[in-house]
Amino acid sequence: MKQADQDVTTRIVRRETHSARTGASAVAAVLGILFFAYVLLESVLQVLGEQPWLIDPPTFGHWLADLPAEVDPVILGLSGALVFLAGLLFFLPAVLPGRRARYALPNPRAAVVVEGEVLAASLARCARMQAGVTPQQVLVTVGRTLVEVQIRPTSGTPVDAEAVRAAVEDELTLTKLDPQPAVRVRVADAGVIGQ
Amino acid sequence: MNATPRTLNRFLLGVLGLVLMGIGGGLVLISVWPAAARSWNGFAADAGEGVASALSSTALPGGSGSWIWALLALLSFLGIVLMTGWMAGQGGGRTGTLVSEYDDDGAPGRVEISGTVAEQALRTALRENPDVTAAAVSTYSVKGRTALRVRITLRQGAAPHLVAADATALVETLDTVLGHQTPVLLSLEAGRRLRFSREDRVR
Image (cartoon, rainbow over all chains, first blue to last red):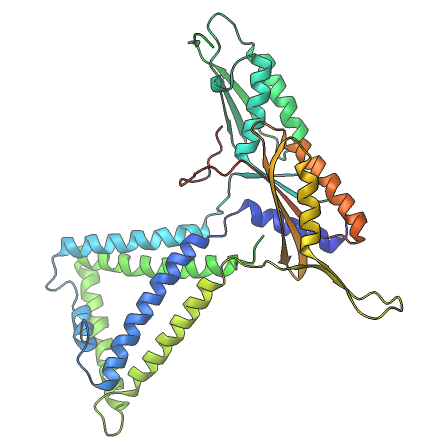
């Protein structure tokens, strides 16, 4: 593959495995539009010399300037805390990595991205074949560093946890995930009847 | 893979977040700490005087208003336009043409290959695979290059690496047929069920 294609592929993988923050941006843009629309309305009213709609800007300025004066400090503090929290809700998406539950598989030709759910389903199928149980008895959780397999065995039929772990690990090795997550198998003490 | 301006999103979200956090933190500070409230009052009184003198010195001839208000109206109109542009810039990036090349072989004209060629070829070929329940192919423009996005919905429990290998072979065949390599994304997905919550990784 050419270097330019390689670069584009790397970029695609990064963009597919991280969130674009579209939702938060849309909310922020709507808030911004509302804010600017209000400022536009009030300033046009001022230019025309009309009555203000909600509050006269100089009055608002004076109220703001001697703020803690006539306002209940509890209400002021609480509303301040709420505004701070709202700010945090916008600030955190801006700085957190925003990883999605998607994993990149190495591939010589294309950018390959697998949803965690797909990976979990394939590992669950593998574990269930090895343990000889029904799909409802296996629960697989895929994380970045750990794959957890939970099995509820059929009553009276023991499940070899080590064999299941080896089978799941083999299947995981075939996907060539990097970094390779560790595999943990937990077999429940209580079995299920009539499967 | 779409053309969402991610850096801009994060920057503007960060700015908005910091502004709101500053206002909120300031409100909390002046409500609980008298010294902060006093220094705010002192600062605000000076600032208020400055604003008042600026307003009176910029009064419109013949009117009572100041042209600062007109400027503010103009700036907020600009702000609305910019915010709308930001919102409209989310997503997008689809194109219709996969290849557009001029090959200097004596024949006049350019060669253009529509994206639907690759889309239909790949979709039909992928449908042969029993592990694939659905496939959708679309053409995007990434960094001035066209790229194919192949979304493959797998049957429950299918091995993703096998489907990926199969799809890679198909893409390589397509390369040979078109005589042109484009970047490709193979996105292996679980079926679209009704999902309102965050992406889960449990099955």
